[in-house]
Amino acid sequence: MLPGAVIVIAYLLGSIPFGYLIVRATKGADVRETGSGGTGATNVSRRAGKAAGVLTLVLDALKGAAAIAIAKLLLGFPGFRIEQLGGHGGSSLQDAHWWLAAAAIAVIVGHIFPVWLRFRGGKGVATGVGVFLMLSPIAVAPAVVVFALVVWRTRYVSLGSMLAAVAIPLFMLVQHAYITPVESLTPMMTAAITGTALIVVAHRENIRRLIGGAEN
Picture 1 (cartoon, one colour):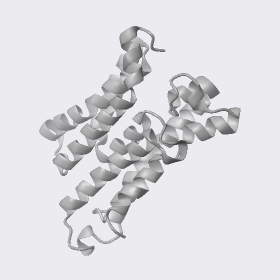
Picture 2 (tube, helix red, strand yellow):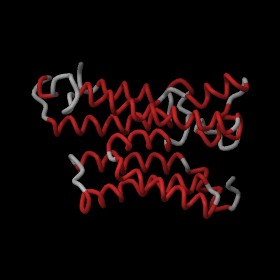
Picture 3 (cartoon, one colour):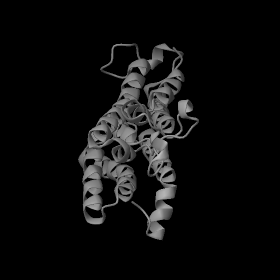
Picture 4 (cartoon, helix red, strand yellow):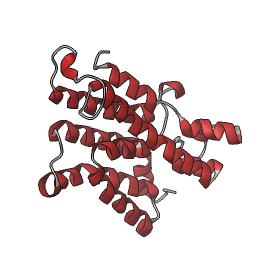
């Protein structure tokens, strides 16, 4: 299988609209017509209740994690049972890390712009959590603390989500400098910064409402 296939697989996984499907199955409604118009856990909770929101959160995170696990398997990372990528055209493990970073970005893009819903999906936060739990769990842990503290102090889930996303590449650098080296830092930071940018852009309407004092 060509290494580029991991990008296609990751995008298609990200495009599975769990929140949309859960609300459609339980309420017979389109979650995109509620609240912020997204398909993520927060908006699903508004339309179908907290249990549906938690289920959406878990499934969206799992698809992010699954995209990375599948990419590592197909790219032959150490600890996986398929040949090293070097057996497919002589690419190096460093190249494999760039393909892995591309898959990480692709699954978040798939969640935000799902082909099945005319490219109108969620904000990418839960999927991003799943991705970086697989790539850099040490950086995710303090980012979750940032999210919790911001939501506790402000009651704005959107603000907490954005600041937590911004925190992940920063904490990844802290991890690399002071705790344990991040393997192939450059591609991993590229994935983290690009993923953060996608998440913040997906929250652009929330940013406008926050500035205008009209955010939920």
